Length: 358
Image 1 (cartoon, rainbow, N blue to C red):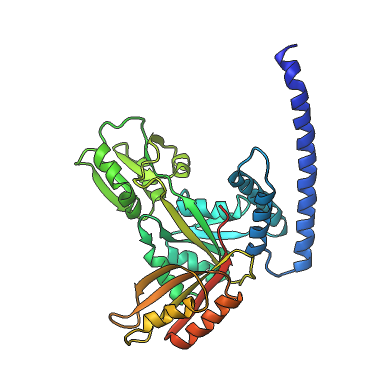
Image 2 (image 1 turned 90 degrees about the vertical axis):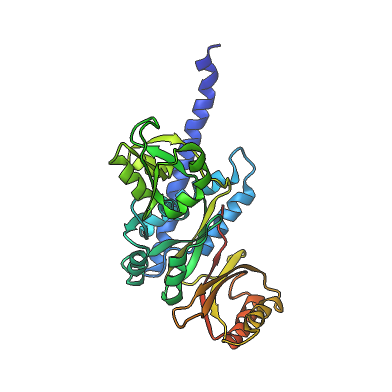
């Protein structure tokens, strides 16, 4: 029996399965459209519902595909079905090819329209003015810590956090040509230069200038225009600007990860596995920060992040960014927030949202 004869039944089975999948996908899309018609002009994207669907699918997965792969496939299915209701527009700090764009596509799928902005301020403003649906903004990196500009914007912005994305960051050394001869400069975002500092010390001559630019995608764009330059950027940027990859995964920390917030105008209901992010400031007297944290501990609420940031209100005054386990509507968290309201000089709930589905 020939190889083709052995392959034939498998190919026929795959063809039948593909036909069945196609029919079911269109059936799912029809239900999505019916839901959209019932909602009318209401919110079409429910992050808590999507998180529940993805978690359920992963819990049912017993096949050859990894849970991460299953989540990625179903995210795209949901993205296409959501676009049947109404395509979403997602703003981010551009240009195209940044890690933030990757985070936006990871969370919303490729059916969403991602709109690059010149600054993170502009990305926020477009959503605040309802000219776009959501903004995806970096909030912290596992190596470099908090992203200050995003934190500053969160203090005054009316937008609410309704989701989060966790993205593994892989940096690559990119160039217009396929060799390392004659390199005179390396472009990258300041954080990327820091995250690859030791690799650069070991692998590039000391006289190669390290030039910080607005984004890694911009670095790739500049490298595409100058044969003597290299860029530190993503795989997506390499493809976007047709660059050669001289070295892969050059980040010093192998678990380098960035966390992003998804912000819009809506609040979410509990999904069963949530976080709440808030901003507080303490009255200017001894022991007040301890009292604020006591409001969490006495209610049994676990704090996962505490970040201080200078306040714009006065010299040597600070605001504190706090993440806690649980949804703001959950009993213990709700009681803790009530206590915080009494103790804090200022309290703002950035949002309660589902934990990222990896």
